[in-house]
Length: 336
Image (tube, rainbow, N blue to C red; front, side, top):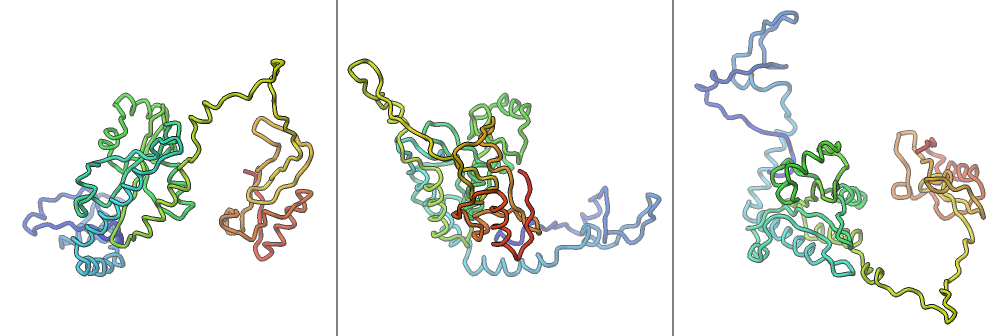
């Protein structure tokens, strides 16, 4: 009801009907006596004592009072209008996003009639959608989730425990679903695009504590991460270079002046005029990462003390520089 605490529920039973409930198991706190190596046990007399398995979540129960107090203060009608307004704003903003070639960035699911777009309180606090690239192919929901996580935004992705609606709005037939399962797809995995179709969607959810600033930051993230301002059609239809009179094509000359190899992710690289090339790219490029003694993987996003601007001439100097910069923390080097 109010985000926190989660996982709290209540079982309401009339005392007269309690005897009709036959539990098939018992656990800590629900028995008066038991014998370990036989099937004998005697349950506790009280109804609540018999059904409350284990230690109750007393900290969460204590928090319920504060959550209900907030709901009573704000009122559910006000919360509904507020969250609906945020959802309508994001829905409209996502619908308006366009790539440079004019193609829509997002496909939004659910009721999307004009009447709902102007009636706060009539729209739920949830917006479900998927993202498309300029060429019309889908961008996987897990990719959106991972990028959002780097931006400090928490999204839900997948089918949201609603396989019926998922199949309906994503256009997945029974054959599609069975084919996806045979391909190894299961809930919670990273196979978000199979046979050209998304296997899940992205969901934005708002609560009473959400603000328009939160919604605006989310839209800034969407525009920054998924809107392409270059027209693919224009690039594909561009005319070929003009030909000279003798029938030979005029080709601009390009020269490779240096090669920079980055053996350690998020660390400075070194430049050279020649380097071995493998089937996966430059030899040893981004082959290692740095991890602190606590197990944290270090990167520029988390540890700006790692310099990415200093030039180095050897891997040994790179490691010494990093160790000196992070001398207060023991670093371990691991292959990726």
